[in-house]
Amino acid sequence: MQKLIIQGGVPLNGEVIISGAKNAALPLLCAALLTKETLKITNVPALQDINTMLALLRQMGTRVDATPPMVELCADSLIHLVAPYEMVKTMRAAILVLGPLLARAGEANISLPGGCAIGLRPVDQHIKGLQAMGAEINIKHGYIQAVAKKLRGARIVFDLVTVTGTENLMMAATLAEGVTILENAAREPEIVDLAQCLIAMGAKIRGAGTDVITIEGVSALHGAEHAVMPDRIETGTFLVAATATGGNIELKATHSHLLDAVLDKLTEAGANITSNQHWIRLSMQHKPKSVNVRTAPYPAFPTDMQAQFMSLNCIADGTAIITETIFENRLMHVQELKRMNANIEVEGNTAIITGIPQLDGAHVMATDLRASASLIIAGLVAHGETVIDRIYHLDRGYERIERKLSAIGAQIRRVN
Image 1: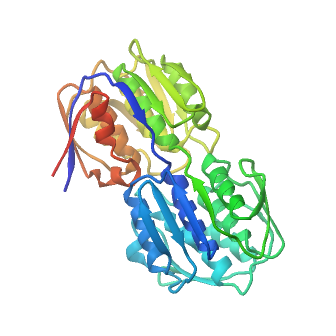
Image 2: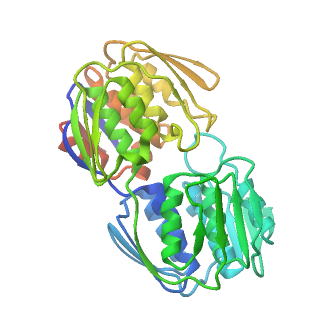
């Protein structure tokens, strides 16, 4: 099993090119199921989750030509409308094939999804919405079995904000008869990115990026070309790492409007940030100040940045309170940070962090994707050597992160 070894205490300085967003690329790949024509997607990150999704689409009959960062997909002949447990258990985004398959092929048999162990990720909102559109759905032996002769437009009000639920139903509605209205829809930039791709394929969608999305169904979609948006979480992770280490970095191929809440908190911590539509620059001249964080759906502070800010607060001046409202198990990195001498107390879904002058390097274990990033940041600022086990989580969501960090001064290496 691979691990990372980090020698801490080196400020990060230099340029980083940000990759395409995993959370945007995965639904875009699934959109290929909606048409018989070729969908070309560029700026696709080289990640394990992308490989898993491409393998899933291939076994359904999709022809895939992948030359990273470009992928061409042609689902002209769907032969196997099943997403088996073996291919779904590591990646909850596999649920995103449900809507497209049902809309185009009239049936789907999808294993209930897995992913990181950060909490329950119910699919009831997906099922409720598809049933409102006329689908018959049963859950048997761990599989969602869905059938629909023809989906019909419907007004669907989500009980809670769900990103994948919004994406799934938006894709399904593109080929449904009539008009579908999604209310209390998620507003994430990744949903806007998907909508733009679907519109390029001939879909009629209004309101993506707001909490009410209207989709007028069409008889068929056609091929298109679309570039994946920049990864706002990778962007935020590098910005936090530079802030924590007292660095000076420029991130290219990204833009600031994707993560306003994160930039506000980094400015509050003392970072100097400038940006335009193509880059973000950050410099940190002194020790960071503690910042309180409360996660919530976009455009509020993202749950995927909570762990990274935990590490920043561990060495900041003052005491911070971090409250996690999205996932019930997303404070598992606390125990690992405490192995590095962090001063953290947990009360329910809230962590109270009192900053200390310096963390100690230690042997720690990554529990999920973003926890992995938080431990890297902690290792970068710690005294001595930090060893991080279970880094396979990292490869699901960060493209060559140790290479990018090494290029800006980090003493980090991957070993078997």
